[in-house]
Image (cartoon, rainbow, N blue to C red; front, side):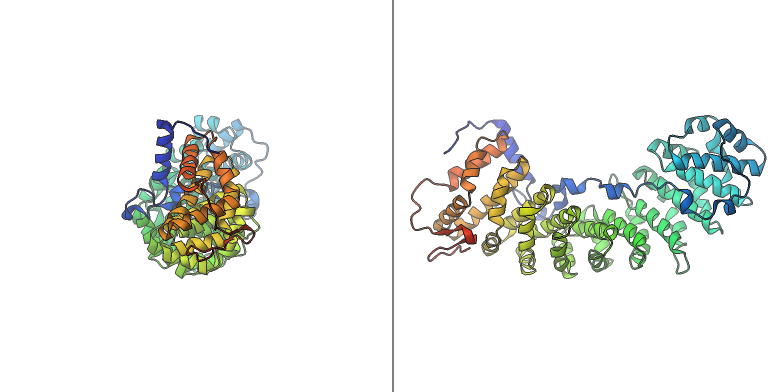
Length: 522
C-alpha cells in the first residue's frame, strides 16, 4: 500500500543535502576520497579518554617525599592571609612555606581562593621564584603551585600565562635537577592542553627543542611519561592544526617513543599520532611517509585498552585518507586485526573498529575485495545484528559504502553474508539519518541488479519483500521526516511493482537467492 504525499521544497532540499553528503553521490572523482571521517560525527567528538589527557593536577603521591624536597616546616593550617604574608616575606623559608600551602590548596581543588591570591599579586611572586636557581626548593614549590593552577579551567591557565610563566617554565627545562625540569614539563603540558592558542604560543617560544634534549636512554621512565604527554598535547587541536614545521620536529621523537614498552608512554604517543592524522590528506601523508603505520597497526592488538584505543583511532584516521593511505594500512595488516576488534567485549572498541572498517569500505573495489577476503563480512553482520546502536550506525555506513563502490559480485557476497537482512531489520530505528543511509544501500543494490538485467531487479525486489523489507519501506512513507518519506516513496515506485512475480523463487531462511538461470545470484 502506497501513501501519497505531495512533495514539498523542504523535503527535496533535505534529500538533495543527503545525496550531496553521501560519499560518492554527485561528486567528481577527485572528490571521492575527501575525508570520509567527516561522515562519522560521533567518533569525531572528544571522547572521555581523550579529555582526561588535557590537564593533570599533581598530588603528593605522584612525587618524591615532600619533606625531602621542602624541609622548611609544616604549612598545614595556613589561611589565605597567612599564605599572602609568607609568599611576600623576605624569608626564603617563609616563601617556601607560603608556596607549599598554596599548592596544597590547589592540589585538592581548583576552587581555592585564586582571585584573592591574584589580587594580592602572588602569581607574579610565584613566577619570579621560578628563576631563583640558587633556591631549588623554592623553585620547585612555585612550579608545583603554578602547575596545579594551570590544570584548572581555561581562565586559570590564562592567569598563569599572562603572569609570564611560559618563558620561565621553558627556561626551567634546562635545570640540572631532574624533578624541577620535570615539573616544568608538567606545567607546560597543562598550558598546551588548554587549546591551540597557547599550544602555538609554546611552539613559537621554541619549546620543542627544549623538550627533545631530554629524550635519551638514561631518562627515567616516569620523566619520559610526562614528556610524552606534553608532546602529545602539542599535537592536539584542529582549529588551527599545529604548524607543519612543528609536526616535522615532533615526529622523529614520537616515533622513537612509540617503540618503547611502557604502556603510559605508548598511550600518549598513540594519542599524538591520532591527533596528527585526524586532519587533511596532506597531513596524513606526512605521518604515513615516516613508515610508522605498521607499528600503529601492531599496537591495535595491545593488551592494554589505553594503548589499543588511540592506536585504533590513528589507523582509522589513516584509512579515512586517500586510497594510497588506506592501502598502506591494509599492507600493514589492519584487516587481519579488525575481526577481533569487531568482536571485542568493549562497545567503544567495536564502534571505533567498525568506523575504521567503514572508511576502508569506502575505498575502491580492490580494497573492498581485500576486506571480504580477510573475512570481515561475518563480524560486520554480527555488529549489525547485536552491536549497540552507535556501533550499528557505523556498520550501516560500512555496508552502504560497499554498495556504493563495490562490484555486483561483491554485493552478492554482502547479501549472502546476511547484511541485507540485518539492515532491513534496522529500518525500524528512530534515527532518520541511519534510515536514509540504509535506503541508499538498498537503492545501490537495485542499481547493480539492473545492470545485470531487469529480471535480476525483480528477483531482488522479491527477496527484500520476503525479508520483510517491503512492509517496512511502506511504513516509512508515513515517516515524519520528509527526506525519509520521499526516499521510501521513490523506492516503492521504482522497484516494487505490484505486477506478477511468478517464476521467482526465494529462500530467505538461507538468506540467498535461489533462482533458476539467474545471473545476480546470492
